[in-house]
Length: 316
Image 1 (tube, one colour):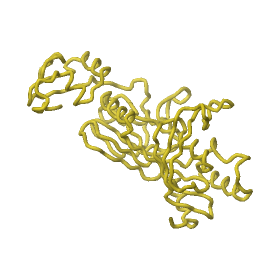
Image 2: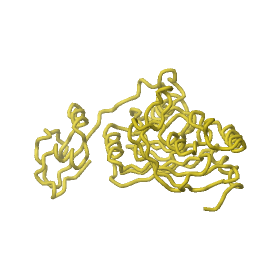
Image 3: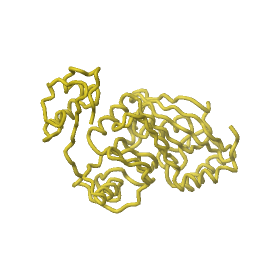
Image 4: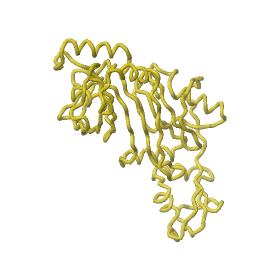
């Protein structure tokens, strides 16, 4: 619901919807097909009509469902929920959406079950994705408008996505920007590499803690682009692969000693998954227009890893 301001006097309803409410042309077409989808002062009207100060505009979405997703009880770590959004702290090892061969046990199965129990008829729409082994903040839109609104913020670069990662070695310099084009490895299409022929990619990082005796560091990272495996590829590229990462790790050619290699392998084995956590997510809430920030505490495995590394910590 939106009240027209004096500044918007005599605007067409279409202009108001697109300029003030951020309704895309595609979404506007969908809403127009919905009975009572666009209302002006309680009446259905054409979007070509002109509005007056004080008019009340309502946009109503038709109810949707996720009938293609099997509801399944699941323990969910809910960080926030309202009529527009669900924010969860995704557990490591959980796939976000059903894929071929993985029709159950995904986050979508658990979320759909939660909504059905609460009497909500909503389609599962994650605003972004996290790798299966990555834990942390994940935003799920409850209608197409919210999904579009946040997606456009992501395209504009105004969404802050901050990750934390425990890595081998120590990044030098301790704060910096990694710029390296990324593409598939021609020898293994499942793996990404930094290559001049790749797609532009940049990652900003800063070191939060170092553990010299253990040969490890805690790093905070922000993405300037969204390439597949970007953080894992870029940190490996600068010689600091993520602890526990089975795909991107020290190679036989890495310039480390036998003792350092043995220590790294021991740390990898102690975790069993890449030590990557989506720590913070910030954006403008489509429902309120206010900037909101959500943070996810470390899961137990990363908290335990940090505790084990603390005796080796060096003050920054």
